[in-house]
Image 1 (cartoon, rainbow, N blue to C red):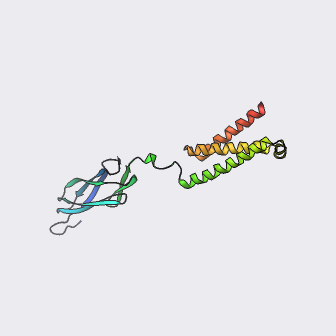
Image 2 (cartoon, one colour):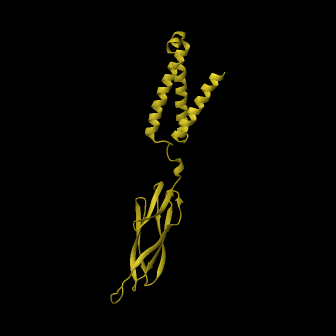
Image 3 (tube, rainbow, N blue to C red):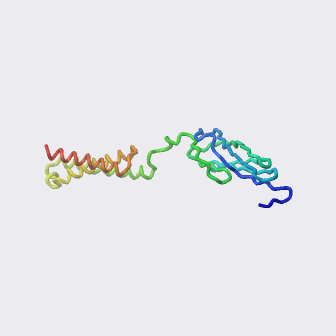
Length: 189
């Protein structure tokens, strides 16, 4: 590689890392950056640090053939998982605040649908109760009420398991096994 007379700086970022992986909103975090000048002249480079949508920058002077480590600091106010970058390159993720207790387990639209479903099940459950109180309706609907009651129990059980954080497939499987056990128990008795 040919050099111009007087030489040129060649400054590169070699390593960058967060000084902490978790902070509370309003606290500061640092990014430790190591830069190296492999050129034959002193030079400057601007290091830009971005966490989420907030950023800062600092100009660093590095002598020819020298390596320098600097720490850039910034206050972060927004809670949640924030991506940290130096000069546009992702260097890690910063957790700001307690992200485990932010909002409901399920998104509001899913909870709304679940509420409508539970309301419909309560309505059907009321009809099952009314049918079971009337001999005439029992004769008319027959075994349908037993299966409807079983379906209501399964759906309520699945809904409860999903809200508690169990995966939908596992919730349906467990509920089906419970209902099979109930019906086998009734058949054997």
